[in-house]
Image 1 (cartoon, helix red, strand yellow):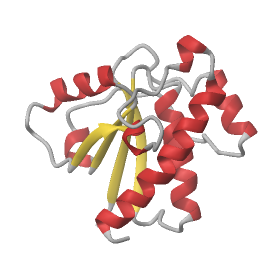
Image 2 (cartoon, helix red, strand yellow):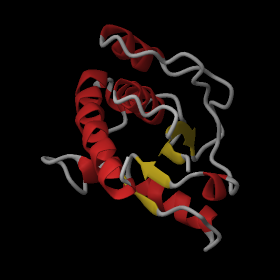
Image 3 (spheres, one colour):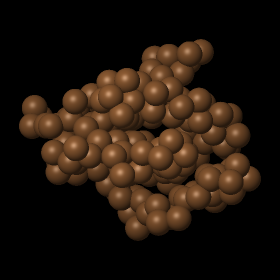
Image 4 (cartoon, helix red, strand yellow):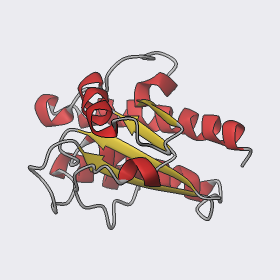
Length: 158
């Protein structure tokens, strides 16, 4: 059984593609790419078809994390059938996800990425599109993705 993880932010050019790329590297390093797949999407439509933001690309390159193949798209109702876990970057994203969900889902878990961070649990990942602080966001995403993968491995016995 494939485990599918979708990361969601507002425009799908900063936080969620960063999380997708970081998580993909962690899954690959754990040799679980055949069992765990990931993608990212935005709640908004403004950046559909665009690559990640320059700041996201820059920090990922600096950290030797590939963002190859990541192109912005908007979340759709089909995502609730196709993804086991939907991980949002902030409370506003969760609200938008819940509006789309309308009770029709195969998703086992929907929550925030920082729920997996020991220091910032329950908080929102700040939007570096607004703050410019891609390094801080990367550090939050990186540790949260480590813990998310460990949680999924325990939950799914992989």
